[in-house]
Length: 377
Ligand SMILES: *[C@@H]1O[C@H](CO)[C@@H](O)[C@H](O)[C@H]1NC(C)=O
Ligand SMILES: *[C@@H]1O[C@H](CO)[C@@H](O)[C@H](O)[C@H]1NC(C)=O
Image (cartoon, rainbow, N blue to C red):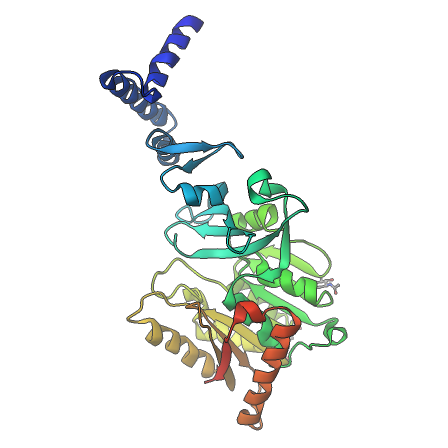
């Protein structure tokens, strides 16, 4: 039996031996392919993924020796610079699948960890910086052991959403004033926004609500989110949480809505949040000097402006003031709205611009923000 298995193995491995005649390699190759099909029929639930992996392995993918993982040989440059740690599909939405990938930016000598969403391959859902341990680099080390640098924000829209509550004065640049302030964050992603707040303003009590338990699992496993007295992750439907906490007369100083769905037209905010009742409840939840920060994203270039304008109009029909960000490098449009009117909006906008600059300088966000600005609408 063992001998037979060995000769079978030798036969199959022949497919990879260039010195053997082509027909023999072809035979071995076909045989592997058939075995893969049979194997997959036996384990049909994972048919697609296994077929892909083995297909990739046979047709030009190589084993990444650093990690024992498969990576494409054809894109050798890219392969050298990224490693996929995990691919997992949501238990709640089986159609949405995520990959956790560490990416080495050779030019900047930085390693980032990204969460890629299947179907949105060119866009990453979230990205955090990894802290390089002394004397180690991407090629000679297993980046899974590296820590997350929560202070390094890699995306402009996250940076703008962080600066927004400081810009409108809900949070103070003097941290002692922020103790006992509260924040409700709908949509976790990799937790980069709330973990940044947690580190720069540890007195703020942060509650993060995330619909998808798989996302929470990934954030805990790969993105270094913490659970403690000042920061907690709740698995649940943000809309229901907003409804319930509004009924309980709870209030928050800052509410961040960064909840997206898989729509290709207008993924953010998710359709459920573009609803009058939800917006009324959000307004009810805000403290008198509070603010809500909403991430808008439309992806179809022809309808982009119309779609995002309609959300801004909806917000403006409930909030006396909304200020919209313009980002040089990203399509996202963070909008911050206030539950109170401004005495003199021109002077306030000048003050906001100043405070936005101060906040981005104080928190080291000015490099990523470049010349991003907020404008009144
Ligand atoms: C923060 O808020 C949560 C929920 O509202 C509460 O249970 C917790 O005790 C608060 N933490 C602090 C430190 O006040
Ligand atoms: C919330 O406030 C309303 C109006 O002030 C009051 O009627 C209601 O009883 C309050 N609900 C709770 C749970 O405190």
